[in-house]
Length: 633
Image (cartoon, rainbow, N blue to C red; front, side, top):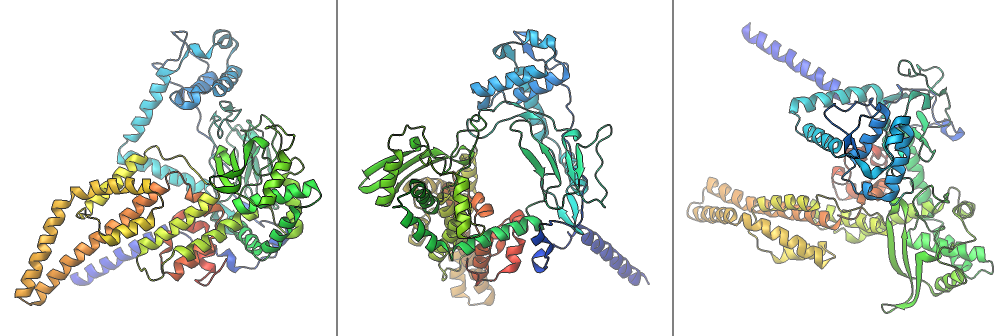
């Protein structure tokens, strides 16, 4: 009976564990790609939508009395609203932004708007303001936050998870869909990209009266916080946003949308790549057309042909029309000015070179020296005649007219589609060229994938600033390499692999120097391991027992394993060094047809996790499910 009772108890325990496990397991993914829904063709985005609304930024917590703002050397107590805005600047005191005139001017102007009359009469010069005590206070708060105990961190994590559970999901046509950005941005100082003319201006706190809610008529509409009301509650099933408001810096509409893993986002991605894929069947004819138009008797058509040539061959963005003073001085192809190019009949032994130098999207510099067709060069000379540097290069063309023309050639075709098409076709071609089908090493396959991805990022000018802690990251990578226990000697095969990896001698020497330093740390350990293998081999020769053979094989496998680990880590170190100023994620998320990656992984039995992280796998679940290894873009 006792034995039976124990078994029964074990069974009950197992059942409880299964129940807990089942509760923790996420709901099945909505396989929308397997459904046929004609409603979307009529413009209807949903039939039922219910959600809890946004999460507002927490209220301002006043500074302790011991933390003082000083003006002209004297402590000064500020009104609550003025104090809050003051803390925004104090938190950024050691940032380079506070050294910029536009930032300081805009901040001070907006700060004075929230001051009382008395405060305005006293505070008239930003240079006399002393924010150091406040800055130090927030720095200490940051350090205290970092030093929290595991229990405190766990408690906060659980609170965040509860918040996500309540506000982070919606009911979309009977399916539980994840919401993207359900937390509203807190108030602060606007930064912008590059030298934005409005940097430093006050981003005001968003309140319920600013918010428009979108949901079904027959749903339970979200309730505003006590004492407040929504600006509007509407029931528009022709749009996909859940919440909307207008931000105060540039008066642009902002939205809370669904997560990238949702149906509506996935369908949009699928359609985008299908249009780009369709361009593949039309691109030769379109190229023939713009090549012919390079000699058109009509100036507008010539300008359009040259712009298309640049958009197609260089993957330039088209560029949008902007109001002066509303944003940073960034341009695209159609908005290029004469000052953004230099024409060289001959340069570095090459004919007809165009030297580009301008700030593109997000104020990322585009600098490139490109050989072009003679007719393109002649047209550029013509376009710049009798013009000043600040004049438009394509003065008879804009993005709207260009896209209207492209749509007449193929439904859905815009300048942006060329960028998606060229990025995706480049990835596919690079993978064909770089992947060695006979190499079964997964790490070297991933290296080929990353190199192909890097080629796309370079084409699209997806740059980033090198991480501030890049040297520390490389140091940690170096330590890992050292811990592999390799003996520090470059084998001929390994050097060949490294040379194949690297396009730059500078990075080669950088990587080699750091890796070699790591190797030396473990020379003694590897000597011991080799001696053990040598002894095991000798023992096996004298005593051909099964145990001795297994021991010797284990020692040999250990050395092979260490060498494999070293190659893997060197690949990671190389990728990190090569990619320190290249943003691979931008093209992977926005311009590369994910079906190319999925098909490549399936063809070479590469785990999809090696190419896509969890978030990316959720976003591209449709692609993972849709295609096999035979897919061709």
